[in-house]
Length: 585
Image (cartoon, rainbow, N blue to C red):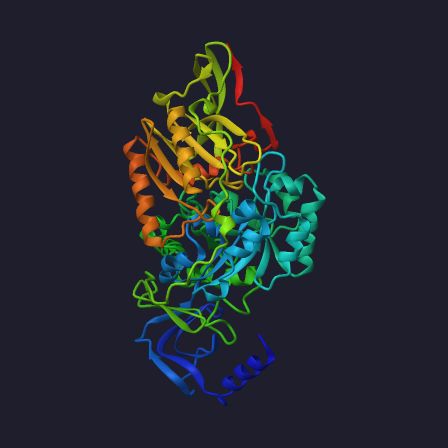
C-alpha cells in the first residue's frame, strides 16, 4: 500500500475522513476471536477500515438486513486453466459462490507456452472481480526426459516470477525433485524462503521415512492427502493440509470424518479444489460447498469458515490483505442469511459489490490473448488408426494396465493378458480394458505412448483431451484405434479440446483453443458443451462421473503408481520409463 493511501486509512480510522461505504446492520463473523457480533462494516476505497463503523460518516450506506457478514472464501490451490475457462469467464461461476481469492499454480499454461503464456494468463488480473495470487510453477516440465512439453521454466525464470508482487509461494514440488537431491529444485526452495514465501508440497505415494526426508526439503503443505491417515501423518510433521474436493479427486469426507472423530485441531487445515470442472462448480458449488459439507458433518460454522479464510491467509502469509473482516484488509465480504447453510446473498470484492442472489453483477472483461496461444497443436503422428497399433509377436500378451481408483487422483497397476490379432495387441472391452495413448502435440517429435487402462467403462467409441497433466499432450482412451484417431484429428482441427467419437465419426467436441486448455466462450456455453459430452460418454457405456477430468490425470508422471506420456509408460515411484508389454507367448 502506498504511504498516501495508508495515511488516508489512518485518518478514516480516526474518524477524520469520510468512508466510501458503510454496510450497516450486519452480524460480523470475526475469524480472529471466533465470535459473531453486531457490526457495521466501514470501507475506504478497496479496504476495510473497521467492522464497527456505527458512528462514522460515509458517502454511501447499505443496509445488510441483519445478514451474517463473513470474509470472502479462499481456494488455496487450483490450476485455474484446468477449469477449461479463462480467468475472466471463470468469475461468473466462482464469485457468486463467495470465492474472492484464488491461489493459482499456472503450471498448465507454462508447460504449453512458458513464461510468456503465464503472463498472458494473468494479464487481466487487476480487472478481475476476485483476487488472483500466484504459486510459482516449480517443475516445468514436471518430468524432464519422460515427457515432451511446449514450454519450460528454468531456475532463472522461477526466480524472476518469485519476485513478482502477486506471487505468494513456490508451487507444488513433487518428491522426485527433493528426495533426488536435485540442485535446481532445491535452489528454487531456497530462493522462495529467502523472499519469505512458503513452498507448496506434493507428497503422493510417500512412506513414513520418505515423507520425513521430503519435509526436511523445506516444504510447507500438501494437497494430495486422500484420507485421514494421510492427513494426520502430514500434520504430525508440520505440514499443513489443503483438503481437496475437485471433480475426480474427492478427499473431503474421508479426511474430515477422521478429524471430527479424533477432535483434531483444524487451524492447519484449509480447502482447495485443485482441478474442478465448471459443471461441477455450477451444480454443487465451490469453496462454499466444502464449507457447507463440513458443517453438515458436525464441524462448527466458525471453524469451517476459519478453514476457508484466515487459516489459508495465515499459512500463505497474506493475512495482512485477505482472510478477515478487520482493518486494512481488502473489503472482500460475503453476506449470508444463515451460518448453518451458507448461501451468499451478496458478495463484495475490494469494496465493490460483484454478486447478487447468485448472479455476478460486474461487466464482462474482454479477452485479449496473443495469437500464438491459439496455435499450439501440431500433430505429426496419431491421425491414423495404424498409429495406435501396439505391435508384438505371439498370440497372447501380458501387459501393464493403469487401474483407476474412483474419486481419487492416484491409480494402481494391474496386469492383464490380452489377445494379439494380426500382430497387434487388442483391447478387452468385456473386461473394461481399453487402449490408452498419449500423442505428442507440439510438433516436436511425433511420439506416441501406448498402454491400457481399466475403469472407464466404455463399450464403444473413444474419448480424448488436450488437457493432460502436466505436459498437455493429447490423451485418448478408446475401444478401437479408428475412433481414437478421429478424436485426435478433431482436436488438431479445433487447436485443442475434448472430443468423443463413435463408429469412425466425431460425435461431439468442446474446442479449447487458448493454449489447448481453455475455451474462449462464456461459462454457460462451456458447461452445456461439457454436459453434452458427458452424456454421450455415458450413452457409450461410460461409468465415471467426470470422465474427462479422470482422463487428464492418467498421463501424470508424478502420481502413483503409473503414468503415461508421449514417451511411454512411467513407473512413477521409480521415475523411469518401463515397457507396456511384460511378456508375450
